[in-house]
Length: 161
Image (cartoon, rainbow, N blue to C red; front, side, top):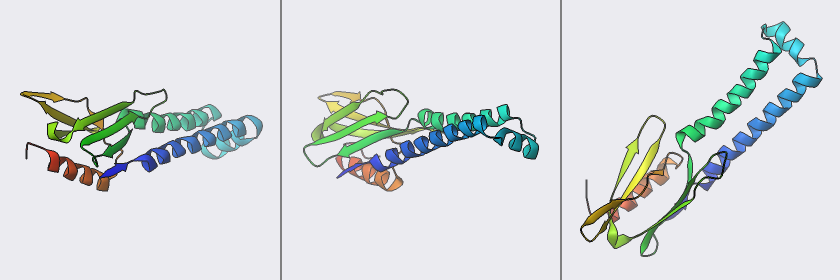
């Protein structure tokens, strides 16, 4: 099985880009038109508060996905290894991670959920030692793909829970 959540990540980026353009257009309109007077006359909100609310709303949306830990995830188990590539989306270059686990060394997996985050933790067996990989954010993987991922990992898992 092979999948990635590229379309989800692209849609998040597109919405952030569209909202940034809307904020810039609103800022320009506030500077060159009588929009501030119109807003104040009809709502009672000063232009500074209106501008702050629009910019604040954009930053809340932007940082929500950072706090949530949204990440690109690519999964492939078609060969002799389980291959997962991932990187978190954020304002700066985030660390890319590639995990390759031979199927015969895969021990188990667990899912850790909090209010905003959902992370996959993979365990491997090397002789008598059990090691764990760093958590992988799976919060932005669509539900159908998560189910397929868990079924695939269950089929390779040594530990059946």
